[in-house]
Image 1 (cartoon, rainbow, N blue to C red):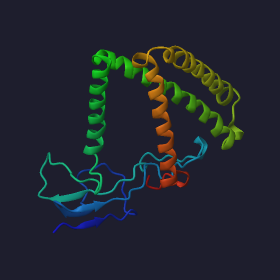
Image 2: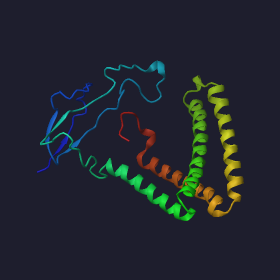
Image 3: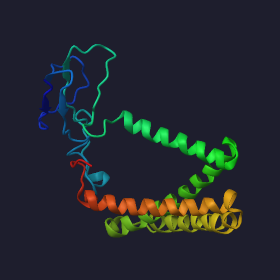
Image 4: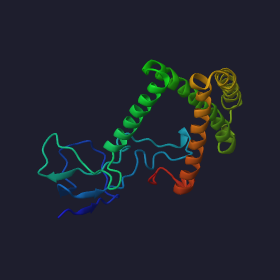
Length: 223
C-alpha cells in the first residue's frame, strides 16, 4: 500500500553528495512532501540592501534528502510530483500544445506560417514595449516608496522616465497610429487582440493576487 511521508523542514544539509546516507527510504508509489527553505534563507531577505546581506556560499543552498527508492534503477524518473497537477511534464506539455494549436490557427487565417510568425511577432513587440514601460514605472515607484533614501535622480528618475516616454511614443506611433489604420486581418486586429489579452492578464493578476495574498509572501513562504 502506498504511503505518504513528510520531510522535516528543519533537517537540512549543504552538500551536493550522492554518497550521503538516505534521509528516507520509500517504495515506488509513495508520496513525499517537501517544505524546503529557499537558497539564501537567513542570508538575504526581501528589501535587504547589499550591505545587509551575509552570504556564506558554503551554506547558501538548503538541501534535503537524499531519498532512497526501493527498486529504482539508473534512468528511472519520478512521476506524480504534484498530487493535483502532475507537474512538471504537464507544465511543459500544455504551453507547447497551446502554442502549436495557436500557430496552426493563425497560419490558416494569415495564409501560411511565414505570415503567422510576422503577425505574432508584432503582438510580441507590443507586449515587450508594455513590459518595458511598467518595468521603468516600477523602478520609480519602488525607490520612491521603499528606498527613498537611495533614490538617485538619474538612475531612478531620469532614465526610467525617458524609457517610459520613448517606449510610449513607439507604442503609440507603431500600433495606435500605423497598425490600427490597416485592414483588420493584417493590422488593426493586432492592436485589438493585444489590448484584449492585456485586459485579461490584468484581471487574472488581480484575481490571483487576491486569492494568494501576494503582498504577504516572503522568501520563506510557499508561492
